[in-house]
Image (cartoon, one colour):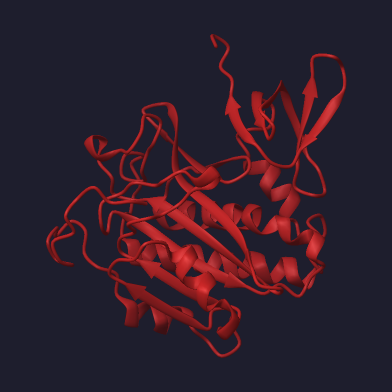
Length: 283
């Protein structure tokens, strides 16, 4: 989420007004709710890094939002480029009271929740690319409009970062294949409305998951992710650690959140980490 544009002050682009932090706090912070604090900063290097540095002193439910990031990171240390106030760039702190081996579901949970919240508030169809991408359709083409990055913080914390392109125009897209809610013809690109919807959705899904002791089947998370996942049923190429490649059909999501790929040899392999490419018929 690195900006190549001069931010020029919070009102320099009237199509991109600043977030209303006091109104967001009134809407989202409640005594019995998940969210315990919400801070909006004009600019920072990385909300994930900032929140992780303070995680030991903060309760679960801290939310940090930046209008602009100068050193934002995606998966595999990729940068994320976006003009100031053109998207939602935030990190949240979880301290899950569930077995540690189920913490790997947190980025998938965030994906389901974000897609649900954005579809509700933005009126745009969303889908998920395993493991951490949010997709929209722009002119019939599947494009990435958001990404998720989860990082362990201390013994009991996980910081989950979420970046969503909201009002990026075609000439502002950082890379081919990127998209935005604006380009997907969202009925609303009001960032305050979108953010409230996303965080309320995360709160609901996280509460269900924790009450189910992190069980993805009992909480409905596994089924919801599979239903919204554009990767399943597709031919994929997995670029795995150690420069190994695996190609086949993505057929399922297992109980650990891994992508199950059916190989040409007739077997299956569960992929826990790697870069997934959706292979087109003409590739």
